[in-house]
Image: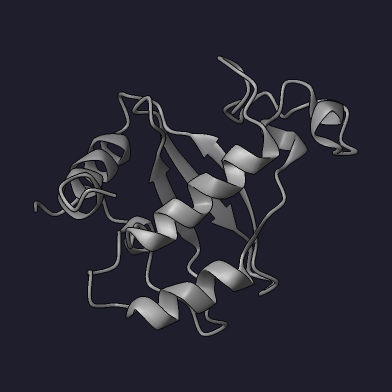
Length: 146
């Protein structure tokens, strides 16, 4: 597996040995996908109060609306496959990545408040991180039959 280009160590996938199965299970039980109105074309559909997305943010519902259950499953799948950054002192990784059944790559991010709440968005195909996540997903998840 190649090293991701770039200089942001917080956007690097942790090594497979970072968390064992039990630790991943605890992490899955602790995180919550809550979404963000900044990344929704129609935030009210998701029960979010923000009425308009930020123009500089990518929209996770631009191509299709992603139901809350699917978004939560994507976050859980990312944890199960070990597609997350090194956990911080609070125990939560800043980033969790996942790949949908149709090959879309998503990045979920939490803030520094330590609550374990995440919001997510798709990564553009042109983004080097998108290609990197797909390659690690192929190695860790798809090849393992997950």
